[in-house]
Image (cartoon, rainbow, N blue to C red; front, side, top):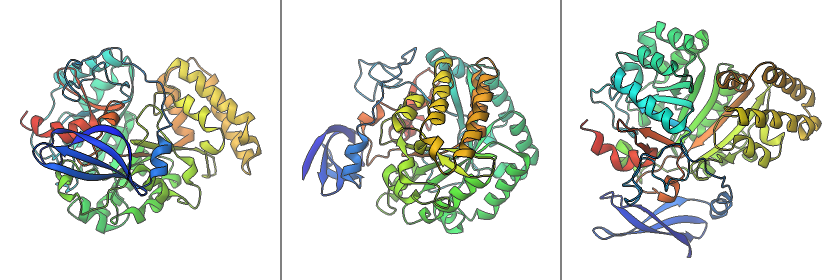
Length: 463
């Protein structure tokens, strides 16, 4: 047994912050925790020591928020908000606009189902506080509950779009309301909303286990509706070991085959909310394990080497790969067309390329680097050069506009993200301090996603 370091985690029983020794036991990395009330416990946090150590090298300088709303005089994470000890800005705020839901998923981290809806005034006030803290919001995610059930959904969206500082709005949804109200898909398309559709594969068994009922026919009908209307779509795949990991390759195939599908977000099942009851019954997957499972997917187009940690986040939280799409539907990994350091520098502190004026220039530099580097000697060099020429023409043809730059990127580049939320078993405050996704609160505080899911859900359930 080798001690790798110390951090702070949570007792799985009482949720108290406790000291945790990070140890290597063979090839596994574990937390050994001590709670004064419940004694010593151990939880597995990673299955490959070599990968765990290698990912620690991916550390980028933090981007400091314009405004701190947390209380740094309080211990972490009690003073979350962010406080001045936080080491990253906010890439994507997750705004819960309702607690209503038309499902009762056994894996729901929010334990949704109550009847609460944000008001328009409260929503607009929250947005103004966000903009004061961050100046620009690349992607504003509307969540719930089931956000499509909010009685003023379109007014909520329109209120967000009135702010030029908000580049894109996405909505995380199970999509069932689209079947009851087909006009809603057109309304979302007209507003250029990204529909992040909860989609757990093409096997009915996965839905019965993860969602509590058969949903495959409904999901396929929703996908058909989104395709017909042309709604910008992201697939959100909850990956559970032994349940649906055999569906990953077919889901990647769907991503590449459908022009309106921009990305695939794979979220390993986190043991928080209702899913806490599944701890020990379903295998928890790490980012590294998902990358291993994806190797060879998409008819061999996806390789493990395509993936790198998201620079602005903790390296154990995110893995991502970008693919340059050709007119004939083929794809090439950006990581294979340019060296990794250049790509990571282009991303810097964002998940999307080129969404401020400085990073817009870095995006152009990235395209030039591909043009003059390995891309010119690939087997698909002719298609690569044609696509890069098209991107350069679009980027050079106008003054910088962040919403336009987003559109250029999504027309030519698809992405596969792996986002590993933490549960009570593996919550690590060193990861929390680099969190770039948070839940904005009415008082202006930004609560890191995993702190909110693991430690604060019960406290907010009565609002």
